[in-house]
Amino acid sequence: MRYVVVTMSLALCFGCSKGEAPKEPAPTKTEAKKPDPKPAPKVAPKPAPKPAAPAVKDDGKVVTVALTGNDQMKYNLSEINVAAGRTVKLTLTHSGKLPLAAMGHNFVLLKAGTDVQAFAAKAVSAAATAYIPASEKGSVLASTKVVGGGESVTIEFAAPAAGSYDYICSFPGHYAMMRGKLVVK
Ligand SMILES: [Cu+2]
Image (spheres, rainbow, N blue to C red):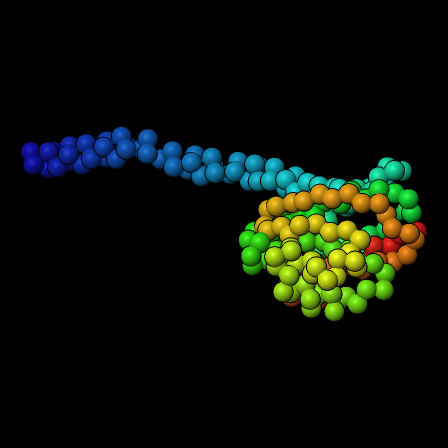
């Protein structure tokens, strides 16, 4: 009789294990994982090249200049070409995050023949006048105020006579890295 009971219980156990069979859908889970690679290719189209807007635009009367200065002490433009007779509308944007006190930027356009190094040396101690030394105002054709990270400023001035003019950031220590030429033709 015991034998029968054992075989019965064994049969029940087998029944149980068979009953647990529904847990087998695990393989279907792995099958479900297979479709995953499908959405992956959708990630590829993400890198969409954004056409950079031109930094200098000329509508025949006004030349619009988008000048930037960053936390690495660099302008985006080392040369700005302008046709004679144009009005120049220049916007200086500080594309960095550092505050004005640490990484201020401006745009100072100097008369032809100005000693840039001498001008910059005097500008160092001209914080009270936005780093435009009072004694050198006569050498300045156009200038912006000093801006800090995230700020911008726009100025308008008439393009000077045909020629090549230095522009610098006169914030202390910047002119060596931040300078360029405005070329009027
Ligand atoms: Cu600067």
